[in-house]
Image 1 (tube, rainbow, N blue to C red):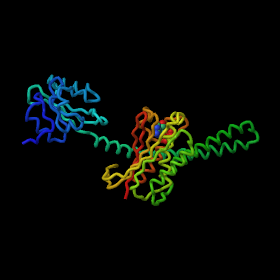
Image 2 (image 1 turned 135 degrees about the vertical axis):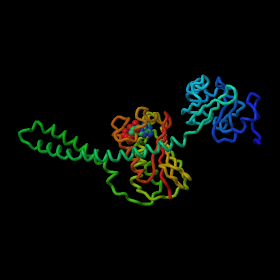
Image 3 (image 1 turned 90 degrees about the vertical axis):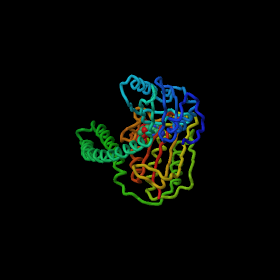
Image 4 (image 1 turned 180 degrees about the vertical axis):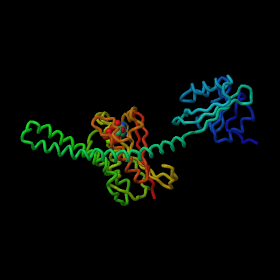
Length: 363
Ligand SMILES: Nc1ncnc2c1ncn2[C@@H]1O[C@H](COP(=O)(O)OP(=O)(O)O)[C@@H](O)[C@H]1O
Ligand SMILES: [Mg+2]
């Protein structure tokens, strides 16, 4: 009835009643009341990267990033507080990143044993994250437009009044202050114009070659940072051209690469700063709740210190900046431009490796 097993189970690992669990795609383990693994099905062996023979006898809780969650759940189940317990956790894998899972723990019919089911959450969290990004970008756009107009209107009046003040013969000693007002009003005006620019400019649609875009950006950034910075290319030549606004896309990629170069300040000084521009063609991908036959994936990867933890989940918001002198518009603008191309930008950052991934559907 059951398929032959790759790993003969040790005696402790119970007989045929558990072998059926090998047919499930869900990760399943049977543990004793102390939390020691008695059985791990094939799916769980594969996920962790160890055979069930090696897993048997180990504490299942130790395979989670948060061991105490399972320990508490086991206690709750054993002390008859709960029949079934569910919670989210991260499963540690041997040669892989932790896997977000939904854990379902239930008592088994067999004396004192517990059955632990792990349902991978990867899909779900990714969808939720994308949807959040999408909604956030939409809210940003509204906010920016309204705010910019609210600022723009009185600004004209302030500047005009300051100019009049400057011309006033009785107020010569105030002319310097008036000049400061004019200067600051101009600076604000420029900021507001930058805020409104991506929404106002008509899109120029052209055939875009993403590697041309990358090369332009690469040349610009190397001209700005001629020392201590290497910009490595890792291009997939099979990527077809697509219709889009080339200048806007250059701006979007430039914003990402400039951020990376800025974050690499210390490494540039040390001479080992590196940015990688990696392109790939992806087949059958889903993002923004749509499935695409083909999509472009462009990574901008740097070996800098990573996005500051405090602003990590807000970096795509306007006016959020983690650096001295930053105005926090670069990523907002880049995200807006890429979304106008039906794509999106995601960020994955840990100290030493920051990866901004830009996805755009291809024809
Ligand atoms: N590659 C990166 N490495 C580390 N931090 C980054 C990176 N890219 C962006 N950031 C952080 O995100 C913030 C927002 O970026 P951005 O929207 O371009 O605004 P600005 O560059 O004006 O600060 C930056 O100030 C920086 O703190
Ligand atoms: Mg920036």
